[in-house]
Amino acid sequence: MLLTSVVIVLREVLEAALLISILSALSGIMGISRQWLLWALGFGFAGAIGYGLGIDTISGLFAGTGQELSSAAMQFLIYLLLIIFAFLAGRSVSGRGSHGTLTVTVMTAIVALAITREGFEILVYLFGFADEWQQSLAVLTGALIGAGVGISAGALIYYLFSSMSHRYALLLGLCVLSLVAAGMISQAALLLIQADWLPSQLPLWDTSAWLAEQSLTGTVLYALIGYEATPTAIQAACYFGGLLLLLIVVLMSTRTPQPSPLEKPL
Amino acid sequence: MQTVMRTILLLLLWLAGIRGVFADKPVFELEIRDHLFIPEVLIVPANTRIKLLVRNHDPSPEEFESYELNREKVIMGKREAVIFIGPLLPGEYPFFGEFHPETALGKVIAE
Image (cartoon, rainbow over all chains, first blue to last red; front, side):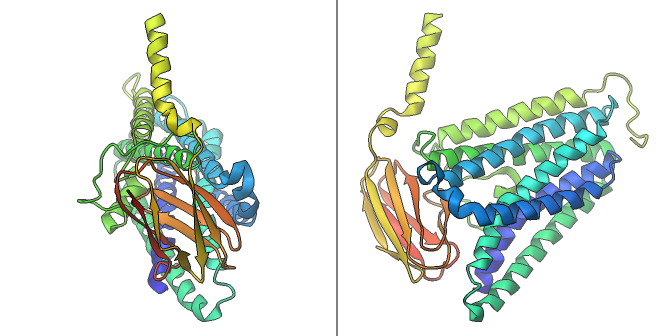
């Protein structure tokens, strides 16, 4: 029970923590006050509670596929917001003006949506044990350990990015975010396949023999680059198409028009 | 131009996998009772899209999860869920209840 709880909570927290840590490190580099993070966490927790309370109704929508569709919609929205963020952050680093308010709004929305998506599952899981008090202690302890490990990983990534040179941190950060975003698009496609909104195909390849998704490395790679052992053609197309589009945005926006004042505080 | 249109149409038809999208999918039922899947082994036809109906008779929520089937879905207590799976190559595809992985275990066999 304890271990199950650790694994469930860690898996969810890890994905959100990765986004949160990179975005807050980058916002610091762009000279944006980190106060937005508090709002984002607040909106995120409220969203997770709201989604958790509504999941019973939501699941029943669209002939029983409301859960897949709402989750896919959120992931697609996060992807679109990450494109906007990459564009704004790229322009900021290449000295072509910063759009503080818009950047803050976009980051807040990304983090709030990520927490809503990941947090609701933790809430549903935890509240499922509310009646079984003998088990709740183990479940809660496990949840705390899982959350602790996930948050520590996030803090580590945050300090790693904060310790790099500004330009390097921004470029690397945007590349990692692009991979995360591509994973989200591929996940959204998978959910639409599960809901039968997209046709299902046989997997293109199967790498589960040498790297299982449920292994520790598989889990970390899933959060980081959206690793999938048996993707279908649609998923792979969404992944690489989504990645390409984001990388183009990053390249276009970070192109320096003139010798840029990068080392100056932005 | 016409060739381009025809290619696009063919691509769309291929994507739509006609047979899969327009035909009614066979329905297979699965129950969750006392954190167990009933039946534990579900035999389904290979290379066919299948509609899986999972009824959770327990008061607590469960998450149907399978790495092999690439599926994940929360099923609240006393509710049922629809999950589309396949087409599957012949073989065994384990699934489990993520909230009770010690007991809620099962597998789909495609043949």
